[in-house]
Image (cartoon, rainbow, N blue to C red; front, side):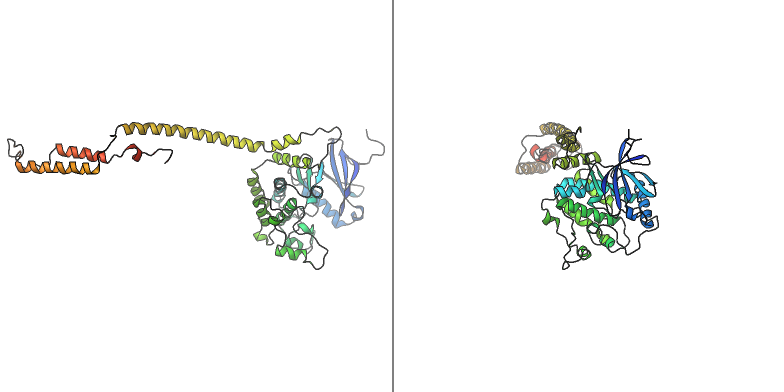
Length: 428
């Protein structure tokens, strides 16, 4: 039962304030009909009369509502109440990535890569709708208590199918994460979000963005540093980070879009291949285990939380299952090969038994051939055994017995012993 001083907005009950940003205010809300928590977003009172901002606010709701993906914050409703516009958003019970990095400093390389993978999956869905988010940054990446990773805030998202609300030459976004072309107010495409994702991954690994803003007038401007790609290499900032992550960040942060990693899909594929193709469930479990171990989440009164140790183990269970499967396959192949080798060796032993154990030396073979030839010549000269007919007295070309003996010796010489003709299958 609602109290008399409960504030309602349509079908939503308004709760505590969650803070305000550059143009909007956020409130925790509850939808009694579906018994779920929501986040209610509205324009700040001093911007409510700005028609362009009101139009942008409404467009944000439509763009976000058109993307249905587990790594993108869902939109439940968009409505007007007493002349003010509201958006009802999915409530992610957790922290934004900026708060996590402020408390933890930086995250382990594998967890950083898993968060980047989940973001790449969400950005890929946004790009599939033909949109460019244009404001990918830690503050707009939400991490839930169960490890879910979601992209929020479509306030300045670009929809190529709609009329532009921003004039060419006007830069919108958050400078440390904006691509060089976005900083210059040029037309951007999906590769601008890839640049921003590279900056986020760099910050996950080091605790700071690649291009820090500085108030020192003697330092180069942000754009000049970006054009020179002048940032501390990950190899020096985090020597323990994997080489593939260092190369991936470098590919995302290229100044020239043509040399940059081409799409969020390519970013996702590379991360999946290196991480062992974890499912979203696997990624959530590992991310949650890390954040709970770091003490970023606390158990609430009456809350039941699955053991973080079991979560960490289950996060690698699929990998262990895959390796067990590979082990069974290898064992089966080795068993088959062993059977074949045994059979081959048995056959070879049988064949070897049919050959003489000791063969005559080549000199003996040649001597036998010479002896047989001399005997033939002697027989021809002395007439040999004369037959009854004139055909019998004709010169004979060869004796049937002597060549047979010679052929037998030659045949044996052509058949080497087992050790030479049939090497052991295990050593061949």
